[in-house]
Amino acid sequence: MSRALSRYGEELLDLYPQELRPDMAAAMQELLRDAFDLAREVDAAERAGIPFAEAARDTATYPTMARAHFGLLDLLHTEFAPHEHRTLEHVVTRAADADVDHVRRNWFLVAAEDRDTLSGPLMRFLLYQAVRLNVWVLTWGEGAALEATGAFRELDERAEVQLRSRLAMDEMHDPAVRPLHVLVAEAVDELSQIWDTRKRELTAGSRDAIELFRGLARAADVARNLGAGDAALVRNEIEGATGGEQIGSRELSERCPSLASQNATDQRRRRLLARLHEDAAPEPSGLRFIDLLSAKH
Image 1 (cartoon, rainbow, N blue to C red):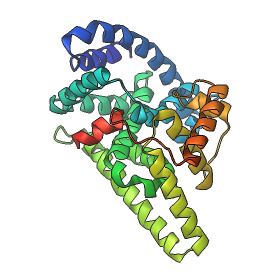
Image 2: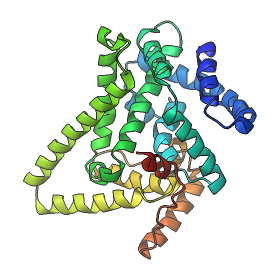
Image 3: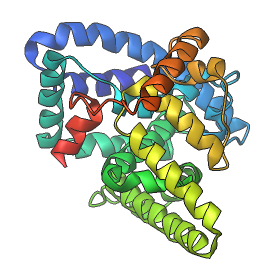
């Protein structure tokens, strides 16, 4: 596992400007250490037959999986200083132009074939998260309505089922197949089907149900304009209103890297509520990761 991760790390370092590579190499070593913790947790969840999305909600048992799963949205909302954003833009542009299909393919093959080491569980979980990340980015412009119905939560469950089905298919090993592209396309199609069902339910629902949906859609739209910590707070409220689990400040801070502690989360909530009450929710800074990715699509 160590050799495989180191190889992937070296390929990622090639995307960074030369002058930043020594610092990034040091950061990569810390990331590799975290990857071992993550791999052990994923392996334990798989052996227990617990789906990824369910395990990620069990912060006490699977803390690293939780922070990786929920930290994905934190990452999209993370704001960078102008000079950091320019560097990140360089990396994203290099990644878009680079021939990384062989990396994605090797990633898929390890996820499909490695049953004896921790590399397999880790790559399966990371592939699952890569699918989620791509779907969120691709649907960002129209996704508030999807969030307001809990569609992404259902997709989290379906995406893993689809992933495991594809990992077992011999056809996916054909060199002409681009596995991540297939998985993302199928996940977008799954999300479309979920949304069609939700729309039919809304059409047949009461006026109160429609008004609730509209309010939640407005809240989701607000969340999409916020930084990471504030967005996590708003989404926690939406989660509870759409049939999911709304959690307290302590557990929320344990799941979301942008929320440092229970006390910091409570303080942030008070400040956010004051701004929203004054109708002063901030506009997107343009320096978030999602702003950069959206501009590239």
